[in-house]
Amino acid sequence: MTAFILVSGAHTGDWVWQEVAGRLRESGAEVRAATLTGMGGRRHEAGPDTDLATHVQDVVELIDRAEAPEVVLVGHCYGIHPVLGAAGHRPERIGRIVYLDAGMPQDGDPALKLIPDQNVRDRLGQATGPDAPTGDDRLVPPPAPGAWHRWGSTEGVPEAALARLADRAAPQPLGTLTQPLRLTEAAAALPATGILCTANGSSIAMVEQVLRLGEPTLMALVDAEVTFFELATGHWPMLSAPAELAEALLGAAAGEGHRLSAPDDTRPGHLRPFLLDVPERPRERVGRVDLYPPDADGPQPAVVFVHGGPVPAGLRPTPRDWPSYTGYGRYVAAQGAVGVTVDHRLHDLTDYGRAAEDIADAVALVRADPRVDEDRVALWFFSGGGPLSADWLAAPPPWLRCVAATYPVLMPPPSWGITGPRFRPADAIRSAGRLPFVLTRVGQEIPEIAATVEEFLAAAKECAAEVEIVDLPDGHHGFETIDHTEQARDAVRHAVRSVLGHLRS
Image 1: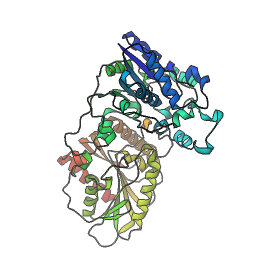
Image 2: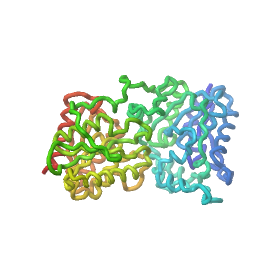
Image 3: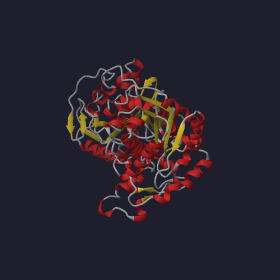
Image 4: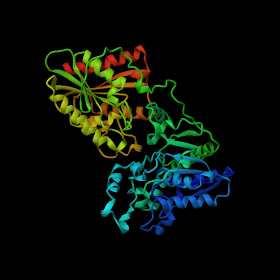
């Protein structure tokens, strides 16, 4: 017999689990849905000292009251923080931890770090020190009615359930979001299952894509005790897909689900050779920028390659030393233009503003170089770097002759928390005018990324934007180092030829 302890996200209470809990009980399971201090029907209990430790203790008490010998802790969104904290106090009772569309907080991380709404992060991030709020100001108000999508996709949630979500939401005690998590080794070692909600922008394919980077935190997920499920719904599956969620939870308790495999090639995908045989060329390094000058006299056009991400800050080598970007830089230089690569600082989903500044600085540096024709520059964006193209599409300067993108993200998924008008290329393309856009699209794309490309193309069609598509039907995300086919080589040659053609026309 299994006891499920269900811990929901910020501003909510046990009521959100009503239908899921009923289905689990029908299967014979014991179910305890948490209403944390200050939440739901306990909102009157919030005090100035209510913090994450308070919520951890709430979950510990539920574990102690569970009658079944094995407990499965389920943490949705913010709820994963008190779940992990409580697991450290009672690891011997826990059979599995379920991350329900939740992040992977590490020891010392406050829940604030994983809040998807950038505006909320910025506001709460200033709520420390001697000027920290007191009294009622220590209560974080819930999203306004109609704004719950800022905390995650509401796709599939019935209107009546959305209304209940807004009506029953309680202010969240500030300390629950700012107090660091204490994650013990015992809790971190427990069997775990991730339930990913694809409409919120997460999927097994995306986890596997990031896994290829060799990021140590994710490499720990390649374990027989770690499994995954996907639900084709938004961030609130207990309201939008309760039957499917209950089934996934029962499967998780039984140790079922998809298991990740380490890549066959011991080298991460991004460190495998570039698909074109490009001769070595000299490069010049200036700060975060590498330049590959061509064998030509006088100023020449330049192509600035913008890598994807987020890329962990400590990952080595950095992107400008990855074979794909050195390959593109050398190849463009061999065709008579200046190839440029940039190590921008997109290390986290909160870093797009800083990365945009890095790109703007790099472009200014490149245009000031006497070997560059300052009036003939192209910008080429890859993968998660795609949102950085929006600034340039929204107000293209006259010297920007072309924008290119390869397997790009062209609309931030809801889980990224980028809710403002910036960094949304599918919106910005409406202001691009006749600026040429060269898009390399791969047929084996991660579905969540492919959907952003289709949204972009629909907007481009509506405004008659000048978009050229280079299709690679059998290509994968990051194909330049993993798909060494003639079709893939032709796609790179075609895209480069098109970009250089726009620079020289």
